[in-house]
Image (cartoon, rainbow, N blue to C red; front, side):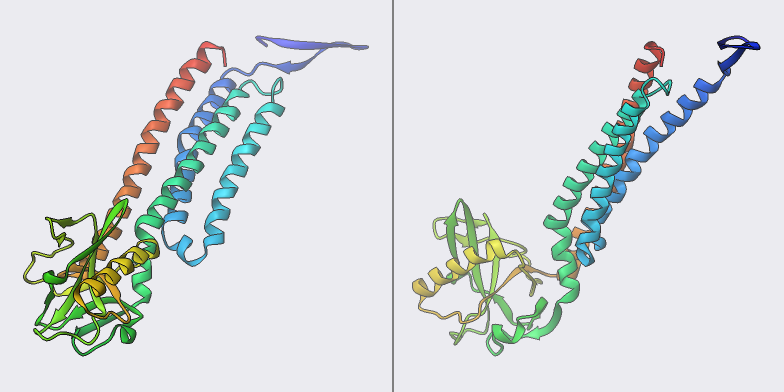
Length: 298
């Protein structure tokens, strides 16, 4: 045999460990394969769980998946420390622990951002009602409290003469949605936007305000911003002598459903792009580690 370690016994010397040609290469190939594939798989799973339906339907399960990823990273780190002196390549455990932990954290951060910025509202719209041919002059906001998408009557429009804004770091812009020319008993339907008021009178320039075919609204669900829109409506009530008993806020658009669909598609494109980017970045790091470990005799 090319190399052996011997122990002294009464019968003479016997080999206790032998070098097996090609064993180190097989271990290297296995370690490299795990380090290339598994962190990206973990990133994709954690990101997907925290950004899409799993998070919306069972948030505890989504966060548990992320916690299991971190636990696996910690276990790999512990295994690497325990294997020193027993395994010819203990540093691959440490590398895997670091890359897996980073993948889980990145997947959790970006998944959480995608959910809160896009998917939560998009999934909420699936549980809200759609109302056709709503006449702002006849129907009240209290009747449509569960509205997600509202298609207003054909003569509905934005009353730009009653535009108003409220400033609090950002500019919260509102304008009533009306029909006909008579003063309404209650202005309950408002198109809104952030930082889109122009001119000395703060004219409303949000959403598809210039689209003559736009007569629909997508419900504004961000509660943190809705409180500032309410303050803007209160200013409009005082300035124009009108009432808004149950104001509802909408993004003014021609096709609310397309607006939701485009946001969901953008979220999925971002997901696929970041998974691909993570794979190639991680692949580059593995190749650099492989070169470094080979120089160290690993």
